[in-house]
Length: 592
Ligand SMILES: [Zn+2]
Ligand SMILES: [Zn+2]
Ligand SMILES: [Zn+2]
Ligand SMILES: [Zn+2]
Ligand SMILES: [Zn+2]
Image (cartoon, rainbow, N blue to C red; front, top):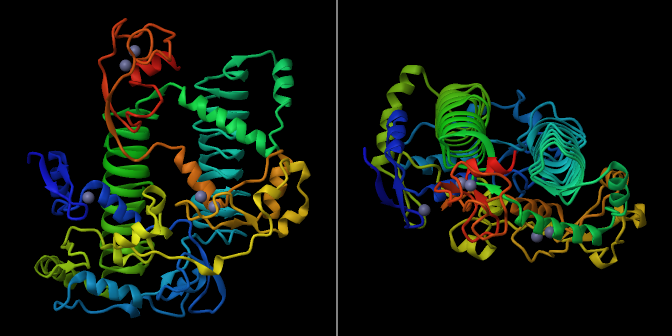
């Protein structure tokens, strides 16, 4: 089929469906989408609450637990032990399909009958109560979405790591602070996009470096300050003058680091070995378009945050060995042929299921199930009954579509309507990637939740927090500290925060200052350091001997000679941004 332009049901903007997209829809037997890619992404994100957790009583055992469902939500919520225990039957919530009501209406009703798993964690979580979307963690606090961590605090997407505090997307590392997109690093502070580096601070895009300070784009260097090489003794003398335990100094150095990053030469796509792919933060991808944070992917489109994905379109969080999935969140490990699902985990042939938690196959319209097959709306059928009923339901979804409050029509082929999400907009990752004010979210038809039980009185104003960590006494552990943003932001700011004992020990041990912001604001500030999930068509800014704006002078002769580079590309660097962006070939001529 040839490309077609359609109007998005949700935002009313035009969007294009490419001919390869049609091929994919045909292959997995779904109609073409009626929402544009951005609106589809936002709609999927509405179903994933990663980091908004509450104290809530388990509705089965009555014990106090931590849950991603707020206490005002009208669901039955079970703790992990009860959910997987024998005291109830998950198919008791099942219901015969009713051809007099739209499918999504019946599904919405099911969500209130089917008990929910309170927190998305594995059985092997030790002493880490306040973590979500986690497996295999020990002694961790407020970490979200990752695996195999120990002694970590305030992190998102950190895996196989130890002693990581306030980081985003760090893997196989130890002792890191305020860093993001780092891999295999040790004692690395205030850094971004580094690999195989240690004993360093304020590094941007450095590989194999040690003992460096305030540098960018370095490969296999030691004893560098502001990208200049020093003898070891002199390096140590200069660096020892910077007392990183001082909040005011860190503020100045962070500003300097911001300027340094602006002047650092960038490549059109961050990552490496991406063949015929567009997006950002891509490694080892082939034929992946409009994908972000994807490693080991083939034939994917509109995938955000994935690892080992094949033939996947429209997905957030794809885990190893996910194949042939469409409109999913959290598919994998492995998953095959999942459509319109949230967390189709180790399953196959799943359609319209939310939390098909493990080993589910051939299920349609189920909610919070595990280890079952041939179920529809949480009711058991025989294989023959199931196979006879599915085409009838699909037809019924088209004949009697669900229409939401705004007049948006949901037939077979749409993801779940936003009102089926068990979470308010600001509880989900939608708020992280597309932050809205409360007013804007409500006027757009989304739910919003304010936790009034979190209105604590400030006992320590920011101006009264000591500048240097050495001046901080243990009494701070009893304080309710003011967040410098004071809720005047779209970061889910809690207005105040606590310092926990393990955290204070970490700051003291590595001479780091107390934070100024609450954990949510810190997380959102780190998110801002990354490029958006959007692409712009641009041309290479290399004009032969320098960059187009004359700020950067090339250090080598490029393939295209002394004239301007003719290469064009899709990049997540918006045209108005200050960074100089080169095509991959020109970039590689400059940065090894
Ligand atoms: Zn749209
Ligand atoms: Zn805050
Ligand atoms: Zn804030
Ligand atoms: Zn170029
Ligand atoms: Zn060039």
